[in-house]
Length: 163
Image (cartoon, rainbow, N blue to C red):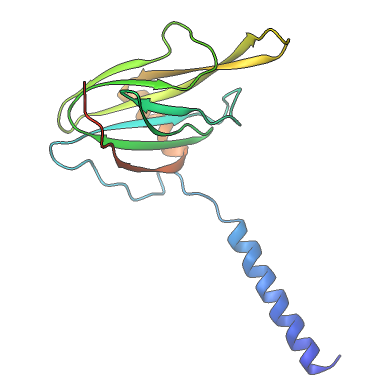
């Protein structure tokens, strides 16, 4: 083989390997991410959704006091730092049901966890199953045990106001 051709093939192979490695990089888990505590006089709400969720391919929008704060992707978690106060946390859903939202009251330095749950047993008029979503506050112990293994979908301040 000619040296110029061999060199071009070597460079092409190295470039392909680099692209393959970059494409295989995984989103870090919450446990693998460096996450600082909320700022003084702030509180934090974690929102997460398990991998095993029946409608895991769907990504409903989560709202605090009616303002969108993120999408609940299966197997991921995100947080929003908030002003102390009361927050109505709900999630976009095709159908309305009882108990789909949570009311969370937080003081400075407090943390709450909201798990997004799916119920996909609603048949619409066309014979298809639909998914209903629920935003359910869970205990600190439950949230602290379930969130670290999930993909970290980011964190930021919520610019809305408490109720």
